[in-house]
Image (tube, rainbow, N blue to C red; front, top):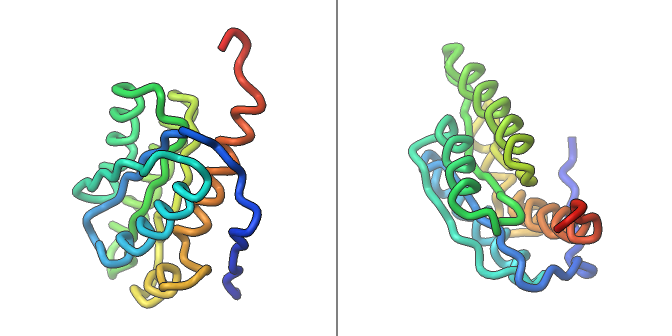
Amino acid sequence: MAQLSHSTSNLPSVPGARAVIVASKWYREVSQSMIEKCSAILEEGGCHRPDVHIVPGCLEIPLAVRRLMQCDPSIEAVIVFGVILKGDTYHFDIVKDLCMSGLERVGFECDVPIINEILPVVRIEDALVRSGDNDKNKGVEAGIAALEIMDWRRGHPLPGT
């Protein structure tokens, strides 16, 4: 399937918005490229420069996101990056499934949008393609999605807020 490039010509403006990034330390060269692209998009849309938190692996990401939300309710969105590489065992499926279900639970529990760019891949080359120095980098997509959902949520505040 061909990757789409994403236009950054008409980004939503969310002045002063707070987003954070949580990434796995595994395959750091992949996540670092996505972090840099995402951070640039967020700042272009008016966000503060996002704090970046590096955790041991993808399984730790949901717990870290939950803790960040408990400590700082001013966070309007969380973006997560990582790579889960399929090997010869079922470990891939276990990590992928637990990570994704954990992120879902935290998102609903904390009522925070979590933009998920954890890449479950069969070949590391697939992750490298999605983190290249171009507009197909998943960090670009994540930044745009975060701006869009923060803008939408600002337009649809909860009663009494």
